[in-house]
Length: 266
Image (cartoon, helix red, strand yellow):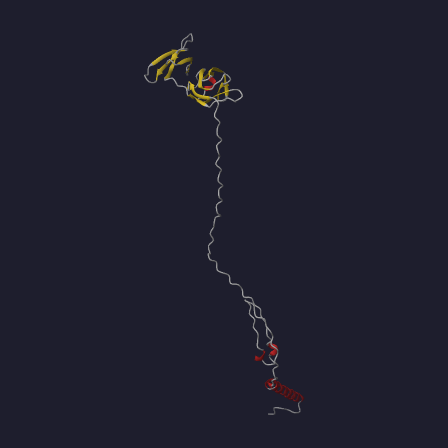
């Protein structure tokens, strides 16, 4: 069997193409293996002055004599400036605690210096009587002391009372029943009109009025209106009949009588 027909033009073209490809392959292989083996003397380049790296930076230079002249364009010295990141200290305490602010110092309060009270020019030493019952009728009050004059008068809770000058040690007045209706204390001062003369304060005690030691039992009604009240002593349980105007226990006077109550005055 014939592998190649020289008379066929297609076969001739294939043969020419194969020859051309073979020549090209031989040239390429020869260049690869033999054309790059020729070496040129390496030229000494002046050393490049490189500044000493600062702390925290790295500079790396290549030695030009370690590479060939063909490789030199690919191995040019590269200066790399890199900053080393600072390493943060680990937290000493991973827990957060509330620390209250320091307390605000309290300023010291100034100690008040009491103003000395001037000595009153008049002296009130005692009362007569020193104690009275509340709702008592008008009564006479005597103030004993010293240095009284005819220009002074007695005051009760700031209310002036008509005063009679007896001597330098005594003045008297009449106290209305309306001023002692409620129990408590009353301030008594002796002074003149312009206040230039005044005495120290002395207290009058007003105590609650005593209550009769009787229970109201009932009423005995009479046609002419002169009714009789029946009272019982709380201690002895004795019964007592009284009418309007009679005295009870030698102290209280019967003022009115009704079916519900009996009214007495001290």
